[in-house]
Length: 513
Image 1 (cartoon, rainbow, N blue to C red):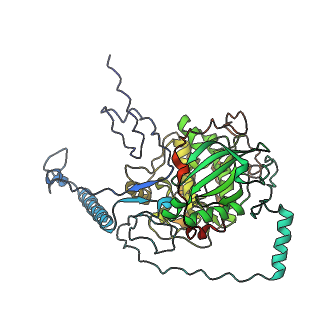
Image 2 (image 1 turned 45 degrees about the vertical axis):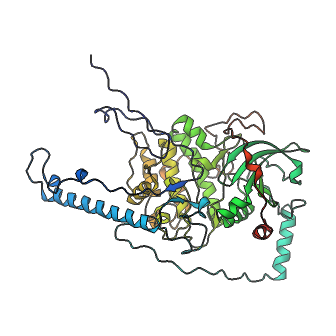
Image 3 (image 1 turned 120 degrees about the vertical axis):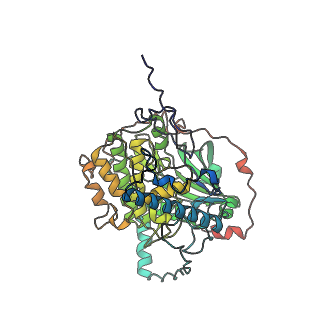
């Protein structure tokens, strides 16, 4: 009896996700789904283009001969296809050479945009000369004139008094800080949020680290008097200034102060000293959705349907406030103790009226208009939703490659290979969300989010019950108490607290933080 062929080995854990089969019968045995690492702070590395040796290049007549009958010419159609493939390969090599001439080295998205080769939250045309890959026949984008922000007109006295009355009716301010207290959530069915603490840093006890980033950490803290738990985000001021992320930090604070939704994280209090910026937020003990997706491999259809419905409600609320999120991925979705979602990490969120040209986000989730630097708006969140639904139901994103530029080329090509187990309706939804033309993208047309809600994949969803948290969550996190950290990874307590203080001149930009 012949031995069955060995199963293909899964690809290694990392950005490179190509795997070669060890058996000639690899088409008969499906490979194991790739397992992606956690995408905390995406780093893009430009790789030097190595010229191929002359011996590896095909002979002039090798592409014109039939493999079945050597020397027999192929048809005109096959000749034309071979010529087009060769021409596209030459154009791709030219594009890579142009990119290497414009700027090589480390290229980061968003958070590390201040380093050489990055692009920060500047206005169009104020970044360095590095440009993302271009489409065939497209010219490099010219630098645009810096947009000047006009001063805001003064409000009449009646409007100021009306706002003051609304603030006093909505909940006042946090004692000792002058920060406005968000009004409690009015959605029926949602649990009562914790009251904002009226305290100082000395009144908080740090228990553990539940998250780390490029220039910050997230601590679980407890009030010494009231014994309530919160999440304290601590950001190093020298690193924020070095990476030119001052505007991102201010955007995150302003957005979190404005929003109030059961599926969005809440901000209670902000503060700064000569070394750190502090943001006190509610603690969500259920952990990241990414951890559950990684452990389960992939979600079934009903599980993906539940999380997609709650995410759509959160995106719809943000867009109603003219806010673009720009960082949707499983790592930024938390589960509370009841199993409902909470979107977190609003560092890339921005109040947006028209368009912005910032290159930020995670490579696998970037929309085509972001890659092409054509200016993007709220449509990028609907593209990211399509990527997220695909990843939740498949276990891997639809566009991945060994390096980011390979990912970009696949995104611009728009070819999607669906696994066979996916539902027909969800395939149709993903195709309509992942449309390169943003004017025809589902969610970005005339009816907005209603077009997504009316899709046939969501035919079993009662949308009025979703923001009221009446749907039964498919995953119930194991939480022993309000301060449980077992659903988060353990992080070492290194020398992060040894950050030197900054000069008073550098603190002026954070005086209102």
